[in-house]
Length: 223
Image 1 (cartoon, rainbow, N blue to C red):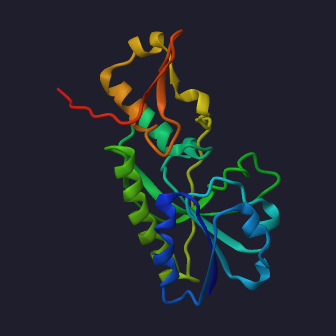
Image 2 (cartoon, helix red, strand yellow; image 1 turned 60 degrees about the vertical axis):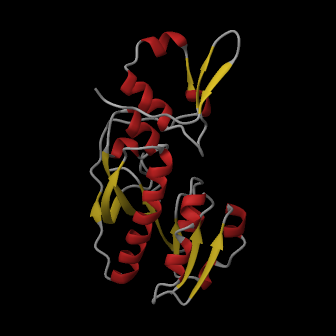
């Protein structure tokens, strides 16, 4: 198979060597920007493997070549962006890491989310600091992509259970916590808020008339 691998985040770039050495992969090219992808002749490749890629591939790409990715949430409500942060803030500690199939349906309200079907899944632990979670995602991504390539072309796709509830993608300004909001939160809620925004994300901060206090790393002990 001739594969295009999309990645730019540190944790996802570590997945590339694992896919590269898979026995079914005869040729592979790494793209770290969307422009690099668009400069390729897609007809010369069999598969796009997307890992931690936040930019939309677009229907011009997904209609021309099979494309898969990994998504770190079990519930459909987290299909719209920043799934790790939203799940942690919502108190979720156990989730799923799944391979999904990029599809595009102009008549679907969910076309932009792509998470309409999945093939392989493993458990994902959302406890600990962000470095722990991202290290785990490197490992689970390797497992998922290798299982997919092992099974290809006999892939069984399962439908993603659709929810009406939508958790909107977080924005950088959502990293701000006012003093009033802070006083209404428990220590565990504060821990979840700040740990999901540890590096490499926009760190959480508290702001007042004097300035901003950034919280880069947190630790929590339950009573």
